[in-house]
Length: 182
Length: 286
Image (cartoon, rainbow over all chains, first blue to last red):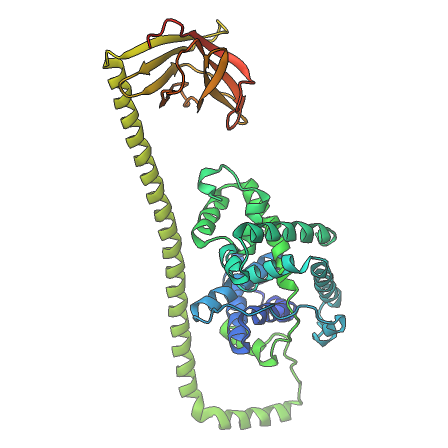
């Protein structure tokens, strides 16, 4: 990111290669529309190029910041298009086979970093599968569905307190499971 | 959860904010708070890390191959720095250059104009977006200040009402005043209990009352028939002044004494804490 901040075009291209699939995948998960996900991905990377100072390294990891940007941008898009609707049943499954990672293109520039990123994604998916289904669902509806706790409660026809508890416990358990990634 | 009423966020609140599950108006308050509060920003940062892991769990979808060109173009980078440059012999290069030049010459001028227009339009849109974001932040800050102002106004109004009630109590011939003194003679607290039968109220007024810990509160008790009944909890302001009022306990027929104790925050259902002030009420007319 320092190189991107220094207007290094090659560094920006490397950054894109490393994170484009991650950004596009998360946008697709929220928007469920490839054209909108492309627009969101483009917008996110262009903003990174134009305002690299928005990322403050002292406040956390780049990937954490990037994912929060992706989530907020995608949810904003989702809402602004008026396409928000109550989803029926479970959101799209995240239980992809591990070899799905093989579909991701490699990055010849830094295969070690790329492998680390993929390993993190694999561990995250594994950690999520350890959550009780109702906690996982509440977290996914809030994160990918862009729903407030009140909206999650309405969508699942559960009391607000129940949803708050599920989210709290889910975040706690996920945090413990992911400590090794910190 | 109302961060405006709490000095700091809990990890649970920080997680809810990081997950994006808070109501928008509450999230706006949290956003303003963490801009100024490093400890809470750290909590949110930790929550964002966990939330980002949820984002990373999205099923992998390969970004379309044409998207990179779109992104680099929109970023104003003319060509991908990774694009392989094929080197030809000077003659071939010259020939290719002539062919390309001839083929594109006709459209080049108009294309350049269109690209320039698009860039201008893009820059204008960017400026509009920046302005909109800045206005949004400003509106949020103004809304917060307005809410603070309304709250302060309500507090002043309530204080004025309380002052008026206390004045009426002091002027009423039906009122009685008892001095309530600190047990520790080195403490300079001066306190009065005002029993107002007209307004059916009890006032406790004190000066130089020491502050208590964050997990403690002062609590006023009255004894009758050997038992103590709570009249509520209170705390002094920064200068040590307190004016507390409550309704007269209607079901009590006689009073023996009143004490002030220090109890755990929120108050106790039965007197348990250290007694710091006391007064005799046996001479009180009923």
